[in-house]
Length: 329
Image (cartoon, rainbow, N blue to C red; front, side, top):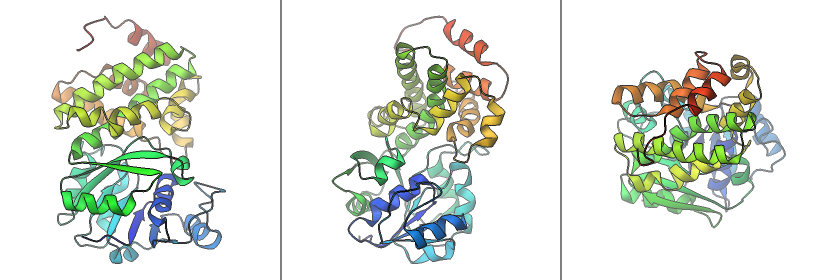
């Protein structure tokens, strides 16, 4: 199976970074973006002046605003925000083109993981998931990165790996699609909680404890949805969790930090140009946890805060007063 011409569907920072990876060595890469200014900036000035300003892009990257141009590509890397992926796939050309889902989240209205959404919309397309600890600006600059590529079709997974694997972009394969997706979705909500701890200056001990207990929640949820423990403890789970919960380069962490510093939640949500996906994931993740009887107190607390049911001081008091139990619970 040969995969040569890649299309990256989504012109934000992460989509642009993946286009850089795909274009390495002069491999023709098409980048679809919704915003006209992004398309113009990439084609005319060889940079994404909106989302990754100042970074020179590979000459093999061409941008388009026409979804019809995707029809001639061998595989699509889907990097649209999770809540818009269904509508973009609905409008894109039909066919059995392989889809690599690179966004992280859960569809709010259906409660479905994105690979289930993609299967509903594109019955004939093979599905894979690319996830892991990745900051877009570091990937685009060529700094060392490792990711998980999950695909139930082994020949396709190997072909995709051969196409995108680089010395500085190491790609590890698995067939655990659900496990890879769960890690990427849950960590966004937990990163908001860790940002709040940072904003309130509660210290590194508190953040480390929150990451560990958050990982326990991620694992419970992932196992319940059919993921494997080793996947959740790997790059797409624990690896991504540690990165996202440790730096203001994370949109979700920086959102939580601003909340912890006392900024208004509603104002923060309306003023952010880039998507903090954890804010959209929190309510559906909490709902699914309640429906399935999965104990996820950190997720519940973040959701209560974002939906205005509690203030930040009340939230912290509730979290700190939670009765201790056995660590394996």
